Image 1: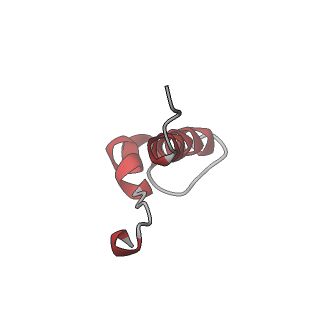
Image 2: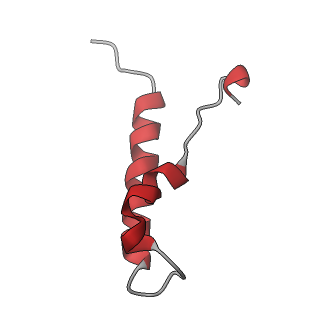
Length: 55
């Protein structure tokens, strides 16, 4: 993917450190934690890849 200029977003790497909170089957109590971790990772990658505004 890098050869084609596509950004790689490893979501497992984002969840893995907090896997004690996200382990096992996703339940209604753990799902918000999983969503928060994934949303933060996706937002960081998108922000990093967007063109920077001209100053």
